[in-house]
Image (cartoon, rainbow, N blue to C red; front, top):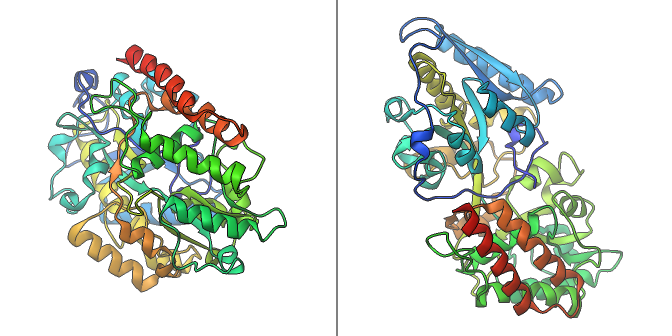
Length: 464
């Protein structure tokens, strides 16, 4: 499965939805606290920190911005040297696992929210709880609670978030207009999605109204987000048993089956994994699909050649038209177990400058506009309260993207939902369900969900 990478670090990414918000028993003990005996100096002296996921020269504008930020930061903090580890993509599963096994992490190492358990089980994260407060991170109280929860186990903090997102319905505004639909009012119910998809498909020329995944764990991932929007759940509250064999789960699969085999508003080419729907959207061959905003500015426009003003977003469809939630996710930096206190303190200063302060680092909107990056997307959804207001004011002053194209998505304020336990195994089990619904006109939805429930219950029993 592909996981997401924020725009500042270039277009390559591996997209994985979400994170799990629950008490992680035993993980705090598995993670090692920082040791003053490690190299790096003590508070007050010179300290060097290594930071990975720096954009390489192959992404020239992002590379230039990163180097400029390091120079500004080091000038402001002459006792700190930042050693950048240039790489893209930022995390490859095999090498990430090997790094954890070897204990060779840089002082600040990039992870996805879903990596937390793996890192803590490997004992490779430093406890930074006592170092993080409203003095060291002034925006701390306004960071989205779900984003902080993704780098927390029990009451112990192991990292700081850099990106947080929820998903919505990406629409092709150009095709909406051609089909006589109003792109400023994206559909919010499955019934409206079906109707609009039929209208778009009538344009012909290989154009289809709606698309979804059914391979590479992405089908199960999307099903999870869709069921969150319906108010359903993938598992019970304890995470010990499947809960998707429900009216909500059946309604979603029935809507997809209807579009595929009754309305014929989904392509007969199925078993699609991440990357295919983005290409179809950029080629003006697809009207709608579910994704996070950065699919547009990270992939559809820069990689696949789409036009920035051809796209917009609404909330994830639901039966009621008001989504109960959305599976969410994001990125963060964790601190290596071998970091000294001085390195932790320096690393927090860097995180505060580069990732957690509107107006600097990744939120230097004036520079982004000057460098030709689109400004104004409703992401990374990292802040609340006064910090969000400041962020919004600065972003609006440099906006190049029409916020009205995304207003229904932004105004939905979708509740960020967590992933099920052993998420990837669960998603993999649901891929065949999605595939059958989209390739078999006689698919038995009830039986498919019952079989998948048995399989997922076994997965959860084994992982417990």
